[in-house]
Length: 200
Image (cartoon, rainbow, N blue to C red; front, side):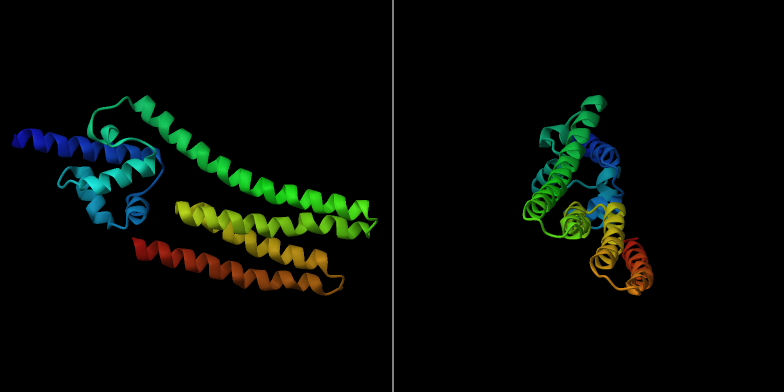
């Protein structure tokens, strides 16, 4: 009985590690999503301890699989397909959300052209769609806890916001606004480095 329990722990640990790696997550990222420490995750993966059934369900939901997939030996190819499907779903949701922003921008642009407004105004919706897209990307990447894409989205927001302001305002010195973006970008880098070091 003891041997079977140890085998079960090792199998679950092996499966957790495999799914985590297939998802491209570090132990820290994975632990953060479950509100556990990376030390606890490390113990699970080494078969030294076993997460309770509630945590196993959370892990299964996170990877888009069943608890049975964590308990037994499964085909690696199927695991890869499941995780690729999960990744595709995330990309689809993000792309769809940003696509809606650009659809609205297009509709507004067409209405501006129909009512014979100045042509410069017609392009403003597309200019403002850039920082709005970055904000949407920040929201989703924060929820999914993808640190690299979150950093890229934050940087995009800073630069596209400054670009939008510069293209919206007719003033010869407005391009100096990009100087403000430089320290903001540095702050974003420092903030993300600090968070990464804290988690490590």
